[in-house]
Image 1 (cartoon, rainbow, N blue to C red):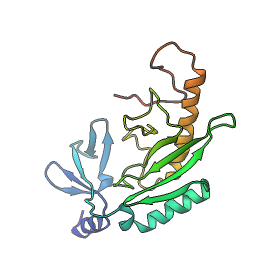
Image 2: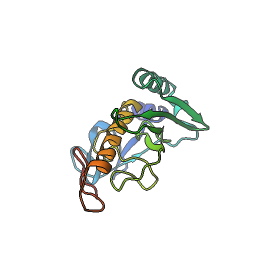
Image 3: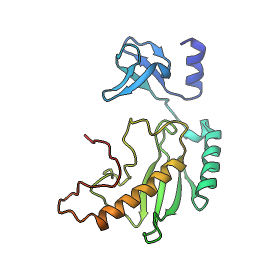
Image 4: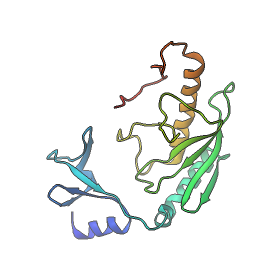
Length: 194
């Protein structure tokens, strides 16, 4: 990787990948494994240096914020964009089926967006699930590191996954009928959690 490419990555606030020898390599020369990021050809561990920011992500990625807004307005026009300080997110309602409850959710972009996925919180009603919900209340929509989230994925995909999550939550709560607590069944494929 030449110096101009590295400088460009740093200027664009993109992460850089560093081998155990301290060499900066291209992201496409790495692969995610169960043990973390490794160099594709050697299987040696690689460390990712994420950009340090002293400003909100959307200040360095203004076009990305416009793209997010356009995508959400096209697919989920009832959702409203909210900006509070450096925190940006969407608020809107989902109803997975006609007979379902309506769930007001908040989609919150992380500081290191687009390198990490937005988090989703149930605002009204609050939900508590023994499965697929983190201790901070955010919904577990995908298994970290499984490749579901890409830097070009938008909040539209996150809201879509949240709608499926609420369907599964309702099914689990109302139709499961198992006697185990917590219940082992959740509709759909599940990643093995550690």
